[in-house]
Image 1 (cartoon, helix red, strand yellow):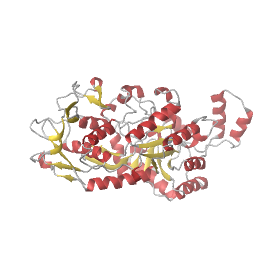
Image 2: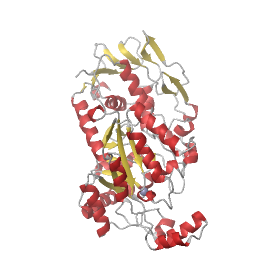
Image 3: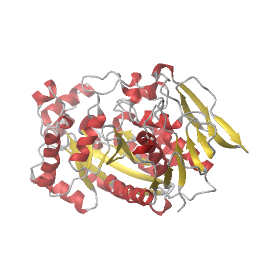
Image 4: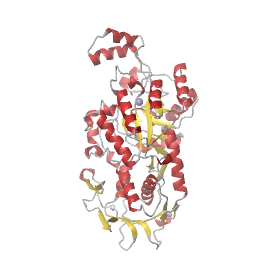
Length: 485
Ligand SMILES: [Zn+2]
């Protein structure tokens, strides 16, 4: 396998450390499937890519960097576009490329810093959050710039791939060279209806005293227990999914005054049987960590252990209830994921808008600032939650859920990403959630109609990605040592 050779300028006014730069290149190269060779700064040889500002360096592609004298002021960032790719200008410079025979020979815009900026949430500092700690979407940089549906890092990866398309072979992202991966999932929030509350909710929601309906709710004919129904829908589209379950039981008083945790108890025959059925049929059971699970390693570990103990299933995947990581410091939560032995998490999304909070639609690793290297735990970035199409639909620019779904599916196909959908277990109840189940079927129809997809549980997707990544990494060479600093 050919290696793509990169030389990185290391100088005292660099905005990123060498390890941060390497992390960005590794992320980009893993996305497109090519191994790397970081050559020493003193190496005289011609390289494929040079990242830096020295004028005498020669390379097939030069990427110029911004330096630490540039003030990173989010309010002044300009969004530029060329070659179907978005660029962020932090220094006001609007020129992006120099070409040689119509192929970019120099990228004057610092796409390496931009990638780091996007993957580390620098733009999220200071965003207001509501009482349940959900970001005020109108304050989100990517939302304001209409970039939540643009996986910018995939664009950079494709740009580099296109420049080197004749020199390297690239490992396909998905098994059997399928175009996209489908990773479906369900958060289990409220699978057992509290009948009097729902009867009341029905009366208020529909301003109706439909006695037949109310009786059905009170006698248990209406249900939120939909595990089998999801499985049978998914089976009919040749797909599968994960169900995230919370072992911590909250209550009404806690709900109103402390945290909106789930109320159910997993230690029941009914729940154990549901988990067993899912697991034995090839569906995944993962952890739906409670609202404040991130506050300590011990509480998080307790939740993972409890779920494993009660269901007797190994738990390797997680999604936070309310996608509630430590929003003030998400990497602190990622470090906990890693410490308690999770293989992946799928919580990096915005609760009030669909799309790509990390500007990427492939699995990835976040950067661990403390250890100056990437975390081992994988992120499988969520694409769409059910309520994005309904309760939060006003935040998006689509006329109906079909348009919203069409748009996201097209993007995942364009960038050959993974589509991670999150539909809550109860929303197949049509009385309380009219059209939600229809929207899911519409989504599956759209995702599968080209018959060019790899569908697997998020855990299987994580395992596939890890294997592919190891293959890329094991072939790679790193000659940049700390002494280069
Ligand atoms: Zn939840």
